View 1: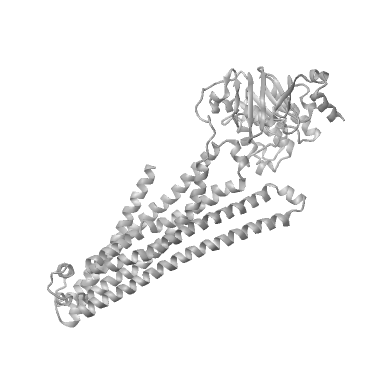
View 2 (view 1 turned 135 degrees about the horizontal axis):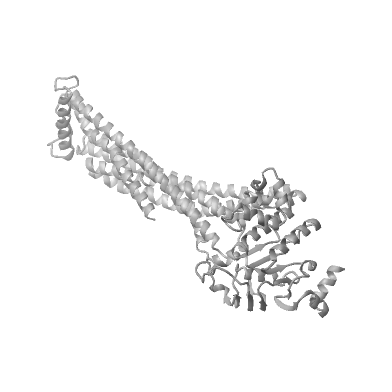
Length: 606
């Protein structure tokens, strides 16, 4: 935050200096016109200004002429030189304008660097904050959000903010200073003209504010449409195999085009609001400028209070004011457009993070004793688990079986602490799981899922995810235990082979064995296997099953399986129905009992 304050302070300082060096030469217009008019008309410069020489303009003209004559003397000019005193003043003005140009150019360079870097840094820091917050959100949050919309929040909305901040940084720091500089010049030369400026400000500001509100509202709808288009494309890419297998290309493309048409329609409405803002601001400026012309005409031609040199000095800054107002208006509408993106991002940052992700009792090891004590859990109003009680000894393999919706995956999620029980508790080595340090607990556990996930990096890096910093020897030992080492060695690039997006360069069985190697290298005390062989053919299933046997050896393991043949050797089989444990025992015990497990086995055998 301190770095941001420094960047803002530096940008404001450089913007003020740029405005000073840009507007300072305007003050020279009055004495220049006086001197040149007097030189060609044969009268004294002060006489042209009209009067008694008591006004600020008179005194400044006399002072600057004196300084110009001194400077001319340094370069060998005198009153008899070509152009006379007026030329001395022109030379001095040109020199001063050049100095202002050099200093102003340096300020512009510094302002561009500081203001643009401020804009980029703000958005970069915001992206990091979003990513950090998203990673701390509970798993339930991601089930409630469309992934494409969430990606749009992180990418598109942040990109809108960066473009807006970059554009605004070019104008917000400079143009207000420029307008103030113009007001100062006018106030010095003709204070009465400030009355017109006071009228011009609301004529430009009120329409700008009202249009900005419309831009903000319509920008919200535009970003929502952009999120819908991103979600539609995400669905196409995520399900590309299904799209092609069922010839859904035209249908999905029609949906994507529909989303884009909605985006274009809402974008056009936002552009109309931005155009209206620019138009109304221009109209307000022109009305104010017309009123100023009438005032100048009155003071010059009727009352004689203002001389021609003063008119020129006033018109010059006012002629540039519109450009500053125009850029400021564009910056304001752009910021209003980005407000919607910021609100969408803010809604993510306000989401409640998962409880207990930080802090808790530290642990170096786990024995692997687990107990579920009257555990209840519901995703909505209807409980998924209803008073589950279970004790697991160290090193036991526990299989969770039952029909779909019985609560197997929910139980596993609670054990991995993706959720917390709403009633009851889960004890690890006799301690409430909620009281333990999650970093330590997750470091001492591992999971192998039904759908293996590999990052788009090398096979080595995918295995090493299980234990960051592990050696090549540890990686190869884990791969051998997972029955994947020989296959990897035959690849042209070996362990440096890219797995591809979601492991697309590998078969399902190869991907699963790599995820098992990832779990083996972690050397967990507690292992979670979520239907790890359900989607494999017989050959791959045998290889994976042998790898799983190696992985489970000596560890407390929880296994979800639909094929009962894969869990016949489990130490304890737990049968769940409608969120309750209806049977527990070994395979032989449950078959002999002739209950729910026996019925499931008979159905599979048949």
